[in-house]
Image (cartoon, rainbow, N blue to C red):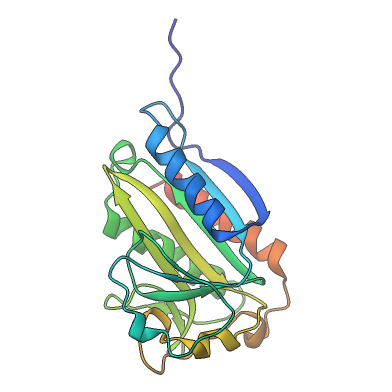
Length: 210
């Protein structure tokens, strides 16, 4: 007797503070070994300070040397920064099985972040020319995805309560002079656990009902 999985359900993994390269390798391993019956997963993590440079990333967008490592990765996009106090969520999805296109997935993620900020009275928006979420032209959330054979790795980051100075060492996402902001600066009192839980639930619901 065969059993069928509920493809709308995500397996949630809380990874805590974990090194970027180890998590990236785990993402690749998971995606390379999964099959048609492997449930999709959502990984929630914080990273120690690291710059990541996407497939088409140009080193000219790294404006100065620092002790923060630079890791060239296989996602789309240019350079961004990850560090403690930032929510990072990786979505390991089978898009074919969900009948979901990459553009729709990007929109879904952006809409969840916009909705989260709206709960706190913050008006945010996406930009079709520059994936991510913005408040008054300042970037608060970044997106970077890779799709291989219909399966995704990487995901999103939302700035909550972090040291923003390393963003001054780069052109964030390849945009010169782009300012970066975080939820704490917007007067949002809720901290990482509450915001993470809300965003996780929004993403789960959006993916289950797409």
